[in-house]
Image 1: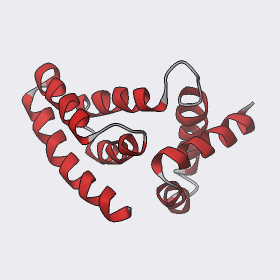
Image 2: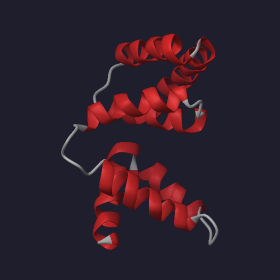
Image 3: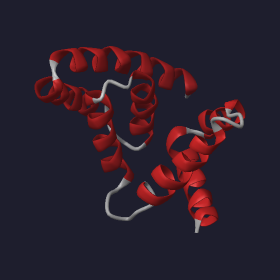
Length: 127
């Protein structure tokens, strides 16, 4: 089961985050951090993202909301670019972050907008 979930998750992870990003994450992993890469790929990407209950676009909206509210800037930047790949527009991302500011606090909203501007620029450069 784990191999099946890993393979499924790796495919989805590469499609959503980009193969370059995923390959770099695995290349940077060592004996200490490789188990986390494997668990993330199997659980988050194989089991959760691989389910049919939500479309990828909807999962991206949920992720942006949660990650912004949790104040995880590195992951937020990654998932902003993933959301763009999944069809979420810049305008929609702005609306998500306005709602985050309202419900999770203004600092979370301000940081999210700041991170989004950087993520948009990087995404456009990556083509």
